[in-house]
Length: 469
Image 1 (cartoon, rainbow, N blue to C red):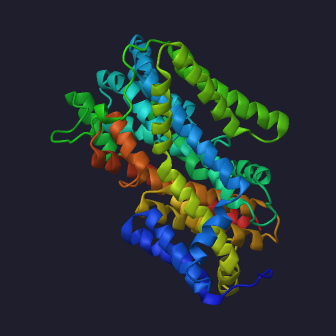
Image 2 (image 1 turned 45 degrees about the vertical axis):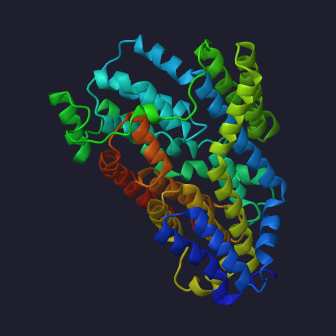
Image 3 (image 1 turned 45 degrees about the horizontal axis):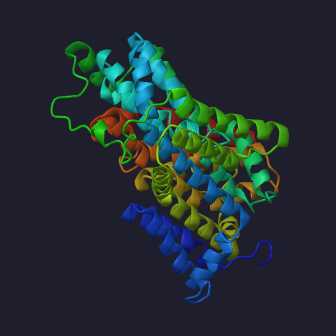
């Protein structure tokens, strides 16, 4: 298709169908799949259009790279569970006497440290700090908030996580971005514009030290815990910590937390950061692969049978299948939108009223709404990024300007806001589970804090929109 060409109103229907179905069914996989199938039929590609779309979108080096990365992340998390690294870390923290404020700060720092997985982070923070926070009379709602607000908001800002790879993968082919290296570079430059994530993470520390006093339902929960000693309200139905994982520690396995947790994490960080500095490209997949191999060798040397290690690895792969499926469909709808000229059509019908001044703020609000309604940020990225980013590049004349970077960050931040506040979200559920909090109580106490951060972020995006061009 020639530059600027499109299929008219038909070109926006796949994305519209995906959004409508996502609101209606709250199932992003189903919504994206149906949107892709109907889209290829509308484009006149027939019944074979759908498998051909999948082959064209997924048979690429970029997708293979991201697929391998997600698989290695899944294996590493499963190895952490099987070696009992979580339980070992809990015992270490139990031996230290920490004040109420310090316990919250430790949980905050821990959430930022476990940046490589938004799934592992809330489980790890909640489960390891729950005993200490109970003794300090910190409400389970507050612990769940800390675990939740330092998971996805942190992961989305670190350029060596699966989130960064996923979002940068969606940017390939947009504007002047031609390959994965350029895409990750643009993503890294957009991080300072991810105001929601920055504010949300900062708020956790400010609330912990009392610089910002608790308010709303959280204030009531904290008052109950302090004055009555009830970390849960009467009648609460907590998601029990015993149900954190399906992979129990191997019986009789004994190894230090240094070897089973800290060493693998340091390997990931050192390789990813080191290659980013020396080679201008973070070898994230290779970093996680090395950590998996090293931890697997440690497990075998310390007595875990080879067959058990392989079964654990397979369990880890199965655990990331939902993310991989969303990833595959997002690549597909991205390619379909590009082939049908979706962005070109939107530009042609909105150029008279959709000004670049409003683009970052509106993008943030739309992404937030979709993510909250569907409970998934990655699905939101897949729906919104193929539309918002090309529009921003069009307004910027094809250059990578602050408007483009702010729009990309608005998609990322909006998706995270909706995702980690939605009661349907995996990370919200995992935070409630890790902290053993009543799930709805966690949602009710967290939303006012998240809305305050979102309001500030939207205001900054408005300012940028009116000053960047």
